[in-house]
Image (cartoon, rainbow over all chains, first blue to last red; front, side):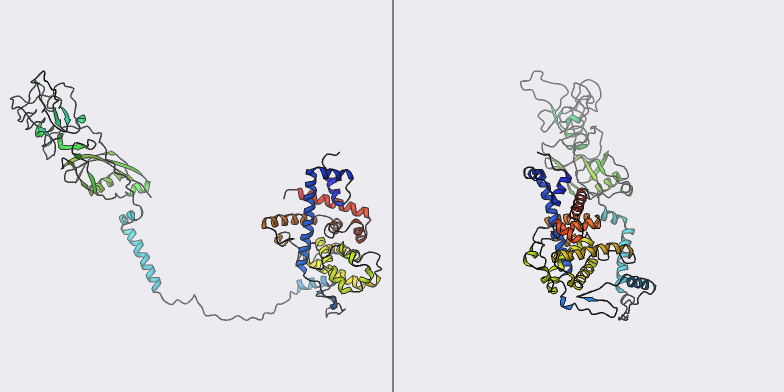
Amino acid sequence: MIRHLTEDQITRWFTGQPTTVERQHVQTCSACAGEVDRFGSTLSLFQSGVADRAERTFGTPPSMMEIVQTHTSAGQVVFGNFVEPPSLLVSLKRAIADVLYPPKIETTVAPVDVAPVWSSRRSQVPQAVSVLLHAAVVGSLLFFPAAASTLFQQPTLTSITMLTPKAPLVLPPDTGKSSGGGGGGMKTPTPPSKGVPPRGADRQLLPPVVEAKNLAPDLVVEPTVIAPQLAYLPQFNLNTIGDPNGVVGPPSAGPGSGGGIGTGKGTGVGDGVGPGVGPGEGGGTSGGVFNYGGIGGGLTPPSVLAKVLPEYSDDARKARIQGTVELIVIVNANGTTTLESVNRSLGYGLDQKAIEALKKWKFQPATKDGKPVAMRVAISVNFSLR
Amino acid sequence: MKTTATADVIPAVIVDPVQEIQDFDRVVERYWARILRFVLAAVHDSDVAETLTQDCFWKAYRSRGAFRGESSLNTWLMRIAVNLVRDHARSRRFQFWKNAKQAAVDSDKTHEWLPDRSISPEQRASVNEQVQAVWEATENLSERQRTVFVLRFVEDMNSLEIAEATGLTENAVNVHLFRAVRAIRKRLKEPL
C-alpha cells in the first residue's frame, strides 16, 4: 500500500504508464481519484475547446476541385481559397518596400459642403429673456437678503414650551392695572403688622386675621387668600400672619376695611381690593400675574393664536449657531406679551430676533374663572439651520 | 463539423490508405479540420495555422504518389504538419520584419471557448477558465513538448503514432509527454 500519489505518479498516470499499485490506489483513495478526475476533465475540456475553436475559426475546408496549379500574376500558387505565402526573400523585399514607399490609398469620396448649423444665430430673444430672468432672480436675492434668508434658511420653530419660571415672586407696589391682589383691614389706627400672608387657596373660607379670636374653636378653619402659588410668596420667617409690606409691631389688621389685613379693602392682604395678596383687585398675588404651572381652580393657560417664525441673524448664520432661546414673558390679559427676562441665551443676535418675533405673536390670554388674566410663561424658541 | 472524426474512428472506416489518398478531395474534407486543429494548438496563431494547413495539404498532394501506405494517412499527414510547424518555429526567428502573432488567438477571448453551449453561464465561465489556463500553459512549453502534448491530448494519438508522426522514438515521446504534463500541472497550480 502506498500513501498518496506523488506529482510524478499522477503525471505518469496521464502519460499512460501507471503501475498496478498506482491503479489500485486510485481506486481506493478518493483524494487521488479526485485529483486524477479533475485534471482528466480539464484535459478533455481543453480538447473540446480547441476543436470548437478550430472549427468555428475556419469553417469548411476548401474544395479540392479548385486545386489546379494556376499561378497568379505574382507567381503565387492558388490553393483553394488560400494563397501560398510569398517566399522569405519576397516577403522581406515587400516589407522594405512598404516602409520606403508606403502604398497610397485612393479615396473615392469627396468632401461635401454642409450648411453651417451652429455658426448662424437666428433669434436673440430667448437669450435675452433668459438673461433677464436670471438677473431678476439673482438681483432679488441680492437686494432683499431677508427674503433670501427666509427663502433658503428658515429656522424651524420646533417647540414652544410653557413652563414655570423660577423667578421668585416679589410684591412690588404696582400702581398699574392688574388682575390680582387684594387688601383688607379692620380700620385700626395702627398700620398692618408685618407677617406671612396666609396660604393661597381657590376659595376663601376665612379671611386672614392677625389674632385668633377664638382660641379653642370646634372646627379649625385655616385663613387663606385666593392665589394659586403661595409657595412663591416671600417667606419672612414670622409665625404671625400679616402683610409682607407691613411694619414690625404688635399684631394689627391695619387701617383698611373689609376684614383682611392691610390698608386696602376686602378680605385679602395688602393695599389692594379683594381676597388676594398685594395691590390690585380680585384674587391672586401682587402685580396680578399668575404663574404658569398653577393651573387649576378656574385658571386656564394662555394659548398661541398666531406665531411668526424668527429670522436667523447674519452672525449666527455665519457661525452656524443652533440651539434654543428661552424667554420668560408675561402674556397680558389683552393677548399681548411683555418680555420679562431671557432665561437661556444663545447670543449672536438670536435672542433679539426671538424677542422681535415674539412681539408679533398673538395669544389667547389665560383666564381665571372665565376672565382673562395675565400669566407668566417661559417660551423656548428653537433655532436650527437646515 | 462532420469531418472532425477522431483517430479511433478513421482507421476503422478506411482500410487501405493508399486507396484513400487517390480521392484527394475526400482526404481534404476528412482531415482538414484535424490538421488545422493540431496546427492551431501548436502555433497559437490562426493565420499561421491556416497557412501551414494549406501548405501541409499542398505538400501531401504533390507527393501523394510517394505515399506507400506504411502508416495511416492520418499519421502521414500529421507528420507533414509536425515538420511544417517545426520549420515555422525555426524560420519565424529570422522573419523579424513580420508582425509577430498578427492573428494570435488571444487567451482573453475566452468567450469564444465554448465546448458546449448548453451549459449555464457559471459553468461556461469555469470551463473557459480551465481551457484558457491550459492554453496559456502550453505556450510556455518547448515546441517539441507542445507538439507531443497536443498530439496526445487534442488528437488522441497514442505514443506509437506520435513517434511515427514526429520521427522520435517512442521512449523520447514518453519523456517529452511526461515533462509537458508535469510542466502544465505545475503551471496550473500556480496562483494566477
